[in-house]
Length: 503
Image (cartoon, rainbow, N blue to C red; front, side, top):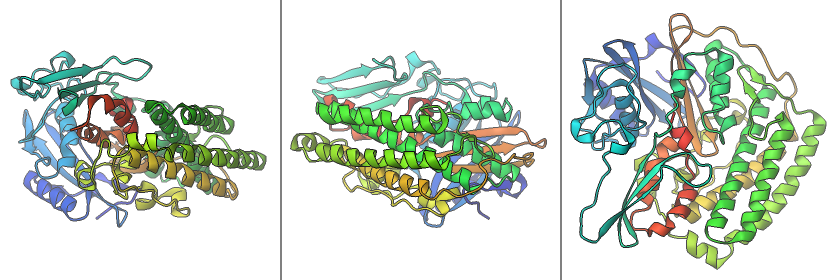
């Protein structure tokens, strides 16, 4: 029994295993070609928790759910992390949300600083301190010449709060620990407490730079549960919004990387170009960040022929400008000297950490939802996967460059041949006691929404995973052995989301 991207299943059809069987099956699946797309809990009763592991097989595009139930206060199970490291943040999240102890977890600490959803005593041992930001039990390196540098959670500019704790020997970083969760917003809980119109607005606020990505995933789970087949034209327009969002953010990152190495001409040019791409979104829907485009049933804004022709003309100009400026950036020895061999994540480490998106592709992980789990318009259009071999700042910048060029090619192609027809159909009522899932390749990588309905057809559980959730660990590991002064550049090469993590 398996699912595909955008499909659904009745809860009664999901196999439920004993806790040892569940663990063995999930670990075996991950070690034999699968990977952990999601792992989360749901309260079935005051003293009964269901754990759901979603395993994906990239080569086949199939998705297999596994379930088990736990009881007791606190409930517990043998952790997956010790045998499959990519599960470690999922298990910390489950512990914090549902007061479930993953036994033998090697790094069990609070994730987002909130009381568990069950209203029972928290699971953290006394030695780990309470879930209070100022008392977080940071790892420490001992030694006479070792010193500690703390950065944040308050930062200059407009970025959200996050704390970075460096253990250093001189300028060399021995260990970096990243602690987030200072602005936990409870988005998943809010998604189960409102109507679909309100939820659509919430989905656009999960991560402010990934509006089209997250709202597309939300729409797809609603459409799956309601049996709504959206028109091909609407699918194409969503893809246009998604790729414009990708291009705008990648170009903005290249601008920031240029500024971080003091090479100001491309920083200025890329910064201006990012505004051009955001203005194309403004032309399409009246909002520079994509808000208001996607709704369950399709899209709210059409692309008339004259607008499509104008967008194509502007994109061709942008394409030529981007090629010229990126050539300027990637051919300067002084720039390459700063980009190369900095913040290296090997392909083996990337696989172990479960990296997704450009950060994973820069380490030769060929993971791209548009190809591996193609749905909607992506079943008919193919964008080549952009890979790099070095796993360093240069590799992550190079992947962005290639993805911009390939997305621009795609945008010009699809705008030249938009399918005819409607852009919206009204969804019907949602299935009862069912689960639907959607995977979308956002500009940072794989994001996932899962919705579970109750016996009335209302939301019983809504699970959101931003790609940053997979990748924060890799940022911390990439700094080992590097100089602390290189952190801003390495950090920007990942450019992960605080908001996407602090759900």
